[in-house]
Length: 275
Image (cartoon, rainbow, N blue to C red; front, side, top):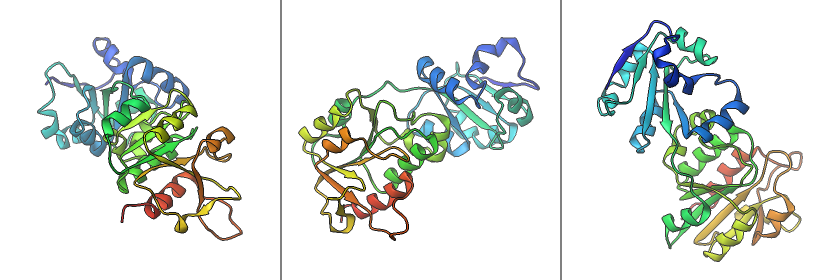
């Protein structure tokens, strides 16, 4: 495992490696590049540890001296062909354009994409809970949703084609790395893949402010439940709602009509947890 000490990150010998870490503030650029180039970034010591523990393969590491020391045990098991670049924090802040007080970045190989049929096959029969996200475009919300899903024992997550990338670094960081081990799939036929869930025995429950929505406390969760949540602001599309088996709502003070989608997911997942 080559540990390479650098004072600055302008060394042309490592230009290809360092390219993974450039322009981190440019969300649109990174959102295009990372899936296309088959990578994602893990940020922070704990998230890097969780990525490695979940079996994700590293491409390279960019660490401050202090963080390299903290990760010494994990780095000892890294293959010899994976470069570990160690530099002062201010040096790679200049490279990335991000104020990285955590001092730990790892570029990881992105796992092969999984579709809904593949997720269902991996989960198998029996009692299961899924979270289904339609067009949730904020990376922070996606990360928080994954964290809630993992905290309340959800078996998997489905994201619609236009949903934000769960492996974008902000999503990964906000999820506290749970996105790295919780199975998820991106729908390829939307909202048609909801019919695929229903055909596999799932009851699709849409969290929506519909007139016929059942108060969450009065809803008896089935053994195979897919909880459907919509985009920030507009909520679920009519096409998605039309494919749901039931609409449910969270009762709240009449002066407030809704919660942030991530907060709503935590309430709904707690209420529908196995008892």
